[in-house]
Length: 421
Ligand SMILES: *Cc1c(COP(=O)(O)O)cnc(C)c1O
Image (cartoon, rainbow, N blue to C red):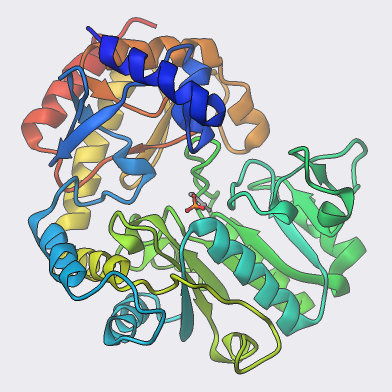
């Protein structure tokens, strides 16, 4: 495979942007290669600048559930652009999109649009703290909630300590109120509530973790979080930036049947444009300015072009939900079975999955980290050289889209089945 043009572009990019990229995972550092530069995409394929063609299972890290360049989405964007890119004022699309979201996420009685998942989570946590008048939050090791200061944490030493910053530039004070629990561990959460219960504003969780590779919740775990937060008067936040409109039209909360107080959405909800949202119970959201005292704002929030892409995407998903989600499930199950045939250890929930290179059953961050990332890199390189584009990191998901044709799924499965560990 010839990637000369990409290599030349990467050399230039290195001069302008840290690591040559605008988001770290794009640098392909963990698979020991220089990244390919994308020229264009269509349907289930992406094409790099050297004219290599790949079946795309990154799907822009989730947003492209309809695949690339869906005509209805593209046309909606073009039509909206002609009327102006941004007004910094109210427009009716905001109401339409809010209505479409609420129809499928009834727990989001009111919501706010923002520009990224990071911003949605940051604002949701502020709302939870403002509403409960408490400072502490509980998050889980291995769950990613964007790059805001208070959420970039890792475990300190000692069993029941507060977390410490997981990035330089984050002052200790910002993470002292972030408590770290183990995903799928009831006991770790109970311990934190025993000690800090009346000071905990919220528990934030990826209802199906997808940022340490895919790690589904154990049966009863989400309901346990629902019960313990209620018992202590804390709020439950589901970060559905990946799972929203992905696991089902109503996200993970519908898929698993557990209802949070606040939900964050991103990725799919913007249909490929920068748009995210947070929302929840009316009385919580009424704490947000200008109604309440929790400040949150945004120059480009609810941007009409982004809203139109989101609306077009949700419209297609909603109208075709009875075929789309069962088909995604079927295609994804087919790929999972190919992985198992190749002897891979795979976790899957609906149309997201990850192959791990460990004998352990992966149920939390510790077991996810036991995966041999060198073996993952080898697997990634094998797939890429065979025209299959997957995440250049062990700790990400493989995304299946509506646009993946049966033919391309079969091709993918044949290649996976021939993989020699
Ligand atoms: C991607 C992601 C985020 C961050 O969203 P950005 O738009 O990249 O800021 C937050 N939470 C989860 C669960 C995510 O997958």
